[in-house]
Image (cartoon, rainbow, N blue to C red; front, side, top):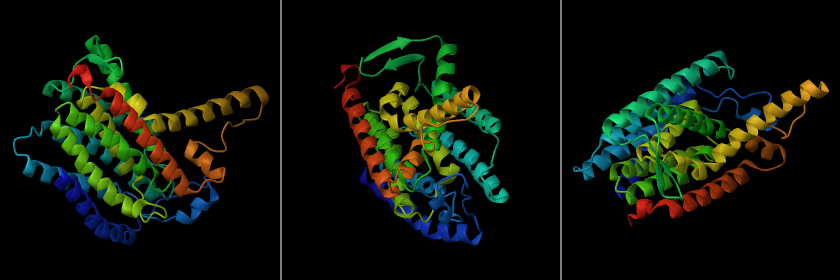
Length: 332
């Protein structure tokens, strides 16, 4: 597995050294929200759409995995990669529209939701067809499976996938944070895949980890490139697809606590603001700014401190999830 990891890392670094200057030359700079932290304004013009860096890295790593494991079943790798790539394309279109308009108004919320929902339903049917998914819901920690009606499971699955993708997307906003938080998540899912004899899924995770480490060399504060919605939607698609390919979507609850809290902080802020505006004629806020990483910034936390604290917390969540789940069905 060291070869896909190194190949993913090397490919990402080499591609970044070519791609970042290209993004600068075509002026593919990230528009910065004026309502955000004022110190973010100096980032105006930093190249975006850098998600293609770790996407290319993952693709090369997967090719190396296939080369060294000719007996491996590559269907789950192809399914996960294509599914996540669809989300990357949605994010790419969003990024291009933002750059063209020179603001943060890309695709409309309804358009993004419908496209994401359609992709989620395709993944569900594809995994069912390939035999990697059943309408039986695995309950982590309890180590039991609850059979559900087909339609109920499909609605549940679509909700989890779209929710996961958007939760990952909203976590992006501070240099390197989404990369740092997602690395332990992918590592945990890959480790579970190996423990459950899903070697191909684990190989895909290893390849992507290599790509993410390569990307982090350029995305760590001060970032030379942002992943954009291209990258964040791809990562959200990967996290959701790997969990469903392992037939363990509820593993995402303990594993993805940071993503979940980032979304909740945004929801709490909006709901409380609207409630107080209606009741007191003046909107009030729970946080200085949402999502929560911006609240920490406005509370005096540096971007590097947020990166390390969030990453460490994600590592703890990944370790707890793996430790309590790797002996699925008493198999080991």
